[in-house]
Length: 169
Ligand SMILES: CCCCCCCC/C=C\CCCCCCCC(=O)SCCNC(=O)CCNC(=O)[C@H](O)C(C)(C)COP(=O)(O)OP(=O)(O)OC[C@H]1O[C@@H](n2cnc3c(N)ncnc32)[C@H](O)[C@@H]1OP(=O)(O)O
Image (cartoon, rainbow, N blue to C red):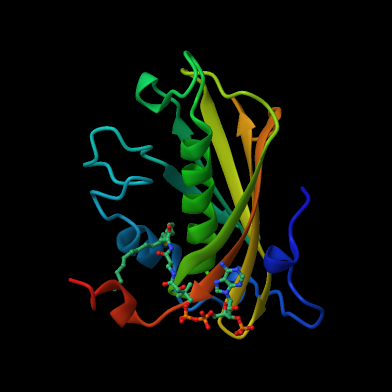
């Protein structure tokens, strides 16, 4: 994918490994299970219900079923929802490093249409960390983890304090 300078780690950025994570997959699953999250919540009627399935070798994996609630053009997933799915899996990769972070910038390339009824297999990984800035890449593949490439994404997440999630309420 062609990522902009804003989502490309600068020289000298470190690439942390999940081995150094301060949060376990179990912790993350619990923390990341907010019922009403549009991306992953199981209580959300029309959400994507992305399932995070594995944290392997510095990559996080997930998938979701594209339903008729997710259409843009008839029979095809809306691009904005595909970007949301990428946001979800990229965010999971950032949090899996033990960093509480939010999306600062999200870039997507849509490579192939995603039909209703298909399962999109998601993958994301960290490409570098510099200070509070976490650089991530990801992809979505059709029907199988090794299936045809449908979506690519690059993102900048920014580490935030816990108060970020509470101060507006
Ligand atoms: C107790 C917690 C319970 C929570 C439970 C949840 C569990 C979940 C677990 C696990 C799964 C997670 C899955 C999540 C997936 C979804 C994620 C989302 O969709 S998040 C929502 C959308 N994003 C926002 O709403 C951010 C809104 N923006 C902001 O709040 C601020 O702008 C923020 C924090 C991003 C930055 O603001 P500043 O004031 O803190 O810091 P500044 O200085 O502006 O930025 C820091 C550095 O980043 C660069 N930067 C920031 N935004 C940039 C951008 N858009 N482009 C380029 N650079 C940017 C800046 O240039 C700066 O760089 P230099 O340090 O100067 O080198």
